Image (cartoon, rainbow, N blue to C red; front, side, top):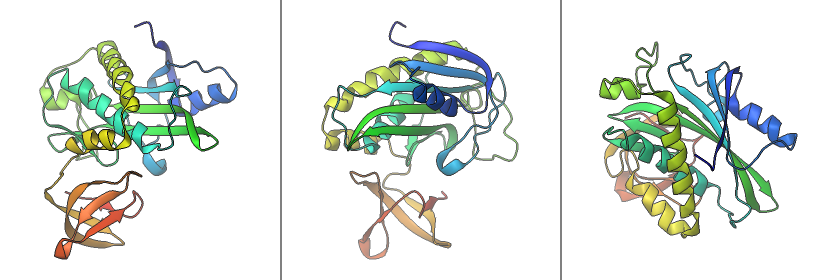
Length: 244
């Protein structure tokens, strides 16, 4: 794959942290990929921990330069990266792949993949991103993680990690070309793949459980939830949790 430069490492605390260190040292190249066999202190959204069994899964970070695009809305990157992973998983015939807002990847109500995207701005424009992807591939047991699964867990088949990594990178490169489309078009594509879209669901906000219906997202990535009296309320990631 000529576009990407894949650097494989045995172990690191976090591929995103290591990539940022390389960026700050002016060592990053567009399309550089750090892929770790073992990630000791993997991170998810809001400093949550991403646990991954050594040698069974993919933990990697991609550096992408967006200097040729005029991007003011970072949520578009999250949309397209999520859709790229969905595309890659579907290429292996996995079914019912959905994006759980904002960017967890689900299959059959089980979480397969988490993303951590760190955007770098110059002025008001997004200049580059460090895209961290943790994808459960061949892990069979998820202790104390009842909602987690893997490609193996969903399909009953084992997968070659290099083949899955290459498929993810091909899909990522292709999907990010959609940045040439309008914000509205990208968000519409994202909403078509949104987990539990238009289905009654249970949420928790401010310690209170309630039933609502996901109706999409706005341009900034806030979740639109229809509550009682058909009122639409906007929530950010810190203020609401989708339970089921």
